[in-house]
Length: 388
Image (cartoon, rainbow, N blue to C red; front, side, top):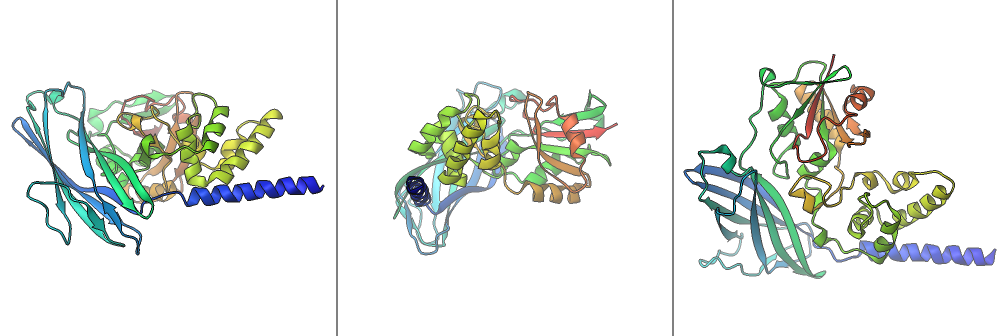
């Protein structure tokens, strides 16, 4: 009995130490986000201008930004190798003037303060005569250094800037798919990202299509990328625990890699993941499956590892969305039909993360079983369900 008590005490101390080490890992209080981006299509030239807002969320910590650079990549259905891309980064600090030579000098973002950076991008040799030669979007990656009490962190973040957007259609321009007594319409959008607002996106692409009784569904992954819930694996530092636990998962699972598993640990903590893993292994010996996902929390099922989403997000790990219930209720009150956030795959599995108050979830699950939105690069994150 005494030995068991000692073993349990050692286990408890180990879990506490893991939690302390996890929650005190080096992190920067700075965030960076895009704002007010504009695209100007001219003859053989496209000008893209916008702001990067850097904010220090710690009231008493000063953080330096000694380096900041960008890498623009054009995405579309054409060869853009001959397009000339010119970039300018112009600091616009509240207390320091930008250098005329455009050199990025190390800047201190004081506690609770913000600064901003103007970005100018010019695309040359773009021929507008053929719509296919216009890029769908520009994927802007930001490479920057945060330097402070936590050490020196090399950070990387990207978001798409829409250049060419699909024209919203009306009822006479679309063709619904009949599926087991339901009319379904996958709706193509531009490449969604943090510059978008989920409510505005849904209104823009569906306002001319919806009828009373329709149900509007949006995929959980597109909603998550709009919320900025994705990160490059370069930013994830796998622990020894994640490298061990990930090996017990099926190779196709997003938790079967060290970075995928570590992303879950970063959200819920190492103790919860460890306990869930141990209990799941014991239950599996008894023939009971799926215990880990129930104990580790909803994010365990929603994480998409690299290659799991449409480019350029295929290079990132996408987490599950936050506050899907509030979004469903708000959108439903604005557009006047029921709304659901769904997770659907090609295996016929349909999971409803959230839905508005009077949504018929069983109807949605039956209607989406054949995954009309597709699981590849169709770029149809919205599906309109119309019961017959």
